[in-house]
Image 1: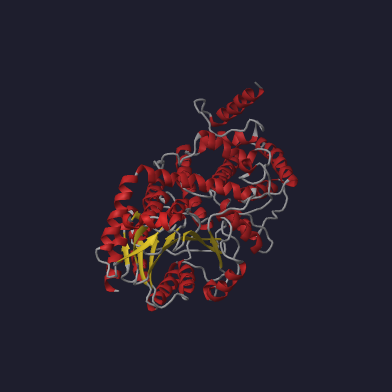
Image 2 (image 1 turned 120 degrees about the vertical axis):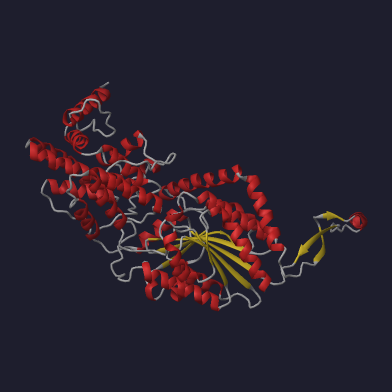
Length: 572
């Protein structure tokens, strides 16, 4: 009863300050009944709520940092509303200081453990005249946020968008960008909604409570039920701790599949020049047992289910594509397909040998046709698993599955790995190795995250296969957005103050191109299937030369592979 009464009083305050009693506010504070609700009323009165909501739909869609971005958007508009009210009344200042004291006390009990809590802590410390003690990067971000002082809502969200793109690493399609720019120009909200991707009213309230409720650790704690005090996306003035980053990578992607000595040996060879501060991590998807890892495992299983549901829904089509790919490549194979009929204890029953089982105890009364791959083809499928692939994991994993099954039927060994970069680590998710036909379903564990340091990936791959025997013919197939980019100034990737050569634009493009040329010089055939925007085709040509195909629809991936494989095999 008291809860409902407080909610009604909170909404009444919003109505009074908004001067609009028809409002159904999504954000209100039924704990502190004055300050935040006064601000929410002013926001509704002075700014275009529809444009704010539309901006949140756009900027948080498929965005792994939506919690931080939502909160920062909210606190900026609250700051602007506070400035408006301060011009009208002295009363707001007293309410602000009372509220700020509560927030300050909250963080004296438990330190801020993520980006938005650091911003909140700094903001309210400053409100009561205390110095900001957060790290250099957070201070810079803070100054940039609260330097925004426009009155026009479209201009505010335009500047916020610029800041978020600067400090966070996430992906927006050219269509989304164009629609956002149109919204800003026309000052009219647009529809960025996609099923189950926008915030519901309940989610909005949950997000609001991140900043206003009693502090509950970091944003995952409701799921974890325990505060592990591991600040993954958290920056202070202390030096960057690589051991903490390793722990985060392990919890996010799963345990390392290679020994520390093996990784060190590999890094000593490839982590040089522009990649001198880069580290390697190979995961097979097996997670440690701790709250952070359990949280990430659960999220990955949710995505895996979506991927498998897509397979089930399109099972007949996918099976047909497997057979078509197999037959297409087989028709042009210049290999010895003579059947080697071997006696086995399984396979097709050989009637003339049944007596051996009874008289001699010889159970090898079956035979099996085996086709030897005399040309020793080995295929590697490298999939760009950066954030640019978010939203199409189901299609990509199904296409990789089609290719894997077809190669298995042709007795051509195939290894499938996804790659992405997070903080200072480039991660290889190993879904299956050459001899792991039974692991094809692991491909549906496909995960998209982070950025992509393509040149480092190609260099590492080259080093891995250098020890192959001379009679092996290696074929490398790459699915990529054609835009290598791993800039280290973003707030979500860590402080990399010694890296003056940012991995982006020309530097990243020409580094990737150099490594592809080295692969080709060692007779490793490469095909890049490029899924990026038209504007990036020029870059893809620089990186991959003639051996790339631009596809608009990822569902055509296996068809392009078919053509390429036929050409490579027929020339061998």
